[in-house]
Image (cartoon, rainbow, N blue to C red):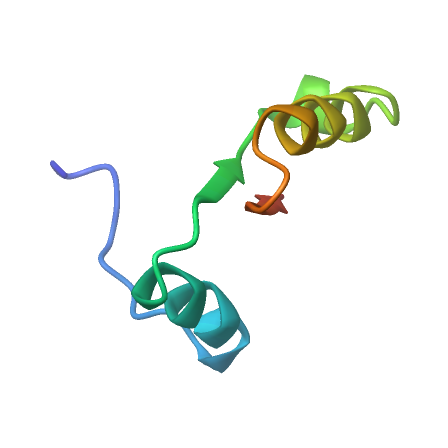
Length: 62
């Protein structure tokens, strides 16, 4: 990962995501920069689009 990031172990709040992956569920992680994440229309649209395409998936947005 280079020198820009420090490895960090995920805390217990991510347990449901780990379990979903172990069970074979599709997990989609949406990460956006400061500009897009501050707009209240972008993340919901992304989540809706992914849920339409992958209805059984777990979508995590942050």
